[in-house]
Amino acid sequence: MISVAVAGACGRMGKMIVGQISKQKDMKLVAAIDADDAPQLGKDIGEVAGFGKLDVKVVGASKIAEVLKKSKPDVLVDFTRAEAAVQNVKAASKSGVHVVVGTTGFTEEQKKEIEGAVRSGKIKAVVSPNMSVGVNVFFKQVGETAKKLGRDYKVEIVEVHHVHKKDAPSGTAKKAAQIIAEVLSIAESEIEIKSVREGEVVGEHTVIFSSPWEQVEVIHRAKSRETFAAGVVRAVRYLAKCGKLGEIQDMQDALGL
Ligand SMILES: NC(=O)c1ccc[n+]([C@@H]2O[C@H](COP(=O)([O-])OP(=O)(O)OC[C@H]3O[C@@H](n4cnc5c(N)ncnc54)[C@H](O)[C@@H]3O)[C@@H](O)[C@H]2O)c1
Image 1 (cartoon, rainbow, N blue to C red):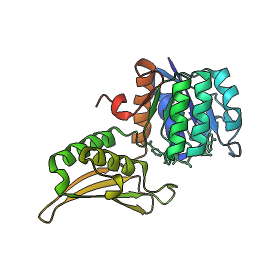
Image 2 (cartoon, rainbow, N blue to C red):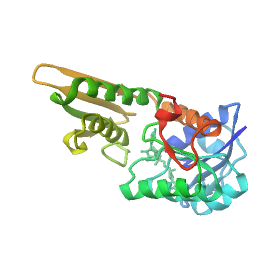
Image 3 (tube, rainbow, N blue to C red):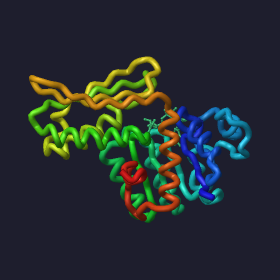
Image 4 (cartoon, protein in one colour):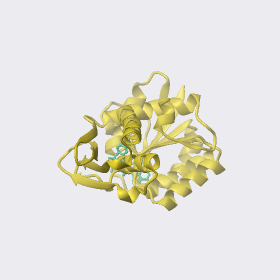
């Protein structure tokens, strides 16, 4: 049985992750953590998330070290905010708990802090701005298309998300730009990213390769946030069975792409 703790458990993603984890036969939810000022503190996370009682109470982030020590999860899943995720990964590292981090919007400094914590604690980690299986196939396709078309095509990325999203451009758009820049040996800044915030759009990414004579587009559309939670389940299972100690891996590794 793989035991799992979820940080950001009361958030939009956290609730779905709690739901999907609790439905897996080989997994058990052992802890739910949210912000110290979350109104759901002390409540049963199953009831908060709308899946019925799970006998796991929501605990405040300042108690994370204590909670991890007591509940001994194999993996901590973090879907919070960038500053919070850094602190949560540090706590997991000190307790020898592997991490799946879906939180986005990290600065270079914060990425280094996470890398350092994973290395010093010799824990396993999957960090990915987009946990969806389809998006990871999209990343692969974007890289291959860039390679085949080469530098003669101008590259532009358009990303559309719901109005509640805090960071722009999206982590997924930045990752696509990074892949293309690497393949074409150009600076990421040469790739224009347009961010649109509109209604309740789950997440759309279009990479446009254009020359004066033609245009090629690679598109991914997420229909439901459940796709990210399903990817989290795959990443948790990957870390429990495989993964590399002290290293950050991404969803491409977890999915064997
Ligand atoms: N990687 C992916 O596939 C993917 C998919 C969707 C969203 N995201 C990212 O996941 C993050 C969360 O997204 P969301 O839509 O669920 O946001 P949300 O605001 O609904 O949820 C975040 C939750 O984290 C809680 N929180 C804040 N500080 C905390 C702390 N120190 N410890 C524990 N919990 C804390 C908040 O109270 C809230 O309940 C964002 O960074 C978002 O961009 C990633």
